[in-house]
Image (tube, rainbow, N blue to C red; front, side, top):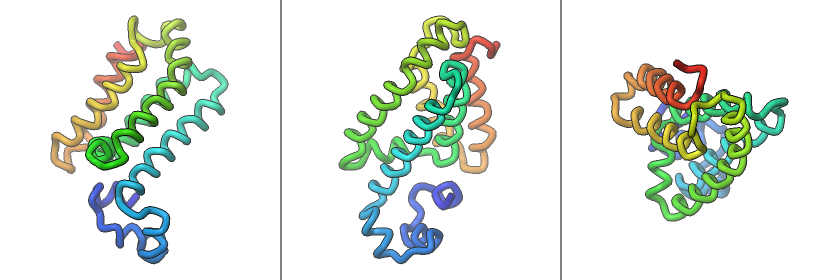
Length: 165
């Protein structure tokens, strides 16, 4: 919530204050902003894993998962580009990307077979779509991001899903 309200470079003291902990406690768990952001991204992946495990039909949950990831990227744009510039970020992003692919490859394949996705759509298309959404948000002023998120998500959704003509 603090990142959403104040942006990625919010002072860590404000995060500690909002969490109701001292600065020392925050730094013990997250010695720097990179570790805090890595924990957030890792937690998002765990939530996706939980959603897929709870889904009665993983293939039909693919649109929901796409939208959820797009919405989380829209809430705090710039997390992934920031991590790509940090010491541990690139390696961690690669591992998390592989884990996400492992989670979604099967449901995407089945969704493709069931005609829920446009012909030829793959996991890489989902990654490209999410990157485009996040990039589009970074290209506009903060006050235009809500509108941009809606438009970008709609455009990418129509490129991926068969029911989005």
